[in-house]
Each structure stands twice: as structure tokens, then as C-alpha cells.
Amino acid sequence: MPTFSVIEIPESRQWRFTDRWGENTLELHYRVVWTPPSVGGETPPTEEDILLELGTAIPVRPQTRIPSAVSGTNGYLKEFICRSVTVTPLRERQYAWDVRAQFSTYHYGWRDDDTWGAEYVKQTRTTSSRKAAFYRLSPTMPSNGDVTWPTSVVDIGGTKVDTNGNPQTRSVAQQHIQIEFLQDRTPTGSGATTADDPSWTALYAYINKRNSAAFLGWPIGTVLCTGATATLDNEWWRVSVTFIYDEMFHLVQVPIVNATGAPVLKPGATLAGQMILQTDKVGFYQEYPTKIDFNNAFLTPTKEQFTKSGPPYV
View: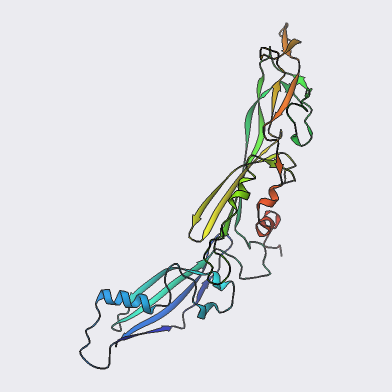
């Protein structure tokens, strides 16, 4: 019977370590040779035979873990997955092939003492503003933006700027924040097959809520979680969670109205020699009354990257 011999050549096991934004790679390099039987009469293999036999002889193939002969008991090496295999016929020898297998992982864990960059975390911040209806300037802001409708609604004070019940439009500063991280859905434990996915129900619980604790440098009540996007790419989830900071705690000004639904008006300021009516009382309405600690939405290794700098200054 013809046989295939597989030898890992000395130039094998080439490593490439990148920073936390890229993939760490490992290349395994093999020499595969088909040996005909010792007795005559054996028909040389066809191209199809070669592909089928090589598929059996080569110890690696895409979407498989690194061979145990390479990883041993090293937990970090076991994270490497074969992404591609290149098979090239050798000119100098018949029925011999050069095989290169590319392995990679996103984890940057080859140094236990290098905690900065240990997890893939990106922050994107965009400062902008929203247009809001203003009946009063410099009103008294409720603590942490908390207003219970209607029991805690009071007149917000400040300088009246509406004209006959029509508010002015002003800009309120905001900052849009996007946190992107990766999560390996591969379950731990030999032979485990049930995916270790993010807790979607837990993540859903943060949507349309404000922060109950300081978060990403912003005080209580000013940050709103607006949504999350998750894309599955091979064995990794790429999760992006979006937040909005608002300098007015996401509050809106609402006039106190009469039975007809129109604002209660009283004589107010004089503009260009003309006395106008202005809204008597104005309250705040909080569309997002529930608060939650956003810090709990992320695992500890991810949270550590929010404030950890690196590499250290020398």
C-alpha cells in the first residue's frame, strides 16, 4: 500500500505577535511525501486521489484547533485555530508537497504579567448636541436628574424665555460613546460544544436606562444606554454597546397647562416695548426614570481596560 509521511520541518513554528488590535499568528510548516508500494503494478495517484489522501495525511485543516503535539498543556496555545492551509507541490521531488498552516487568535495573553491590552476593547466618543425646547434658562436641576411624574414635579425656576407659551430652541451638549469588545464563544472544558454566548437578556436589561454610578468619567444619571450590536465572526462575538451622555440628565422642560391643554400664561417680560405673556410654571419630565450600574454590563477584564494605560512610561 502507498503511504504518506508527514514531517514538521525545522523552519516551522514561526510566531507573529501583534498589539491588542490584531491577530497573533503561528505558522506550522510540514513536508508531506507519498511513497509508492514496494511491489510493482501500483497506479500513481490522480489529482483527486492526492487531494483526498492529503486531506487525511495532513494533521491540520481550517477551523480546527492547534494539534495537541504543539500545544501540550499550554492554555494559551490551545486558543489558536487554523485559518488556512497552503499546499504547494515540490519541483525537486515527485509526489512531495510543502504544507503551511496558519493559526491565529485575538487573545493577547502570551504574557501573564502584561495586563494592559489583555482584552480587545475600543472606545469611540463623538461630542455633539441635541435641540431642546426651553421655557426657562438656568433652571434648578433635580438631583441626578430624577423626577417622578407627577408627584415630584415642581416649578423649575430660572429665567423665562418663552413668548406667549412658545418655547425657544437651544442646544444641549451630548457625547455619544461606543464601547466595542470581543467575546470568545468557545466553551471551556474538553469536548464541550454548547456556545458560551453573551447573556443577551442581561444586556437587554440595560437598554433605555441611566447610570446609577459614575461611568466612563460621567456623573450619576447623565449617561443613557441606547442599544447594542453583536456580530458573530467565526468563534468570536464582536459586541458594540452605545451610550449617550447628556448635560441635562436627558430631561425635557414641559409647561404646566390648563384644562384646554394650553400653557397657563401670565404677564411676563417686555420685548421691544411690548409686554408679552409667558408660561406661569414649568416642570421637568424624565423619559428614563430607571437607573442601573453600567459597570456591571462588562466583565472585569474588559472593565479594567477602561482606565488602564500602557505601555508604561520608561
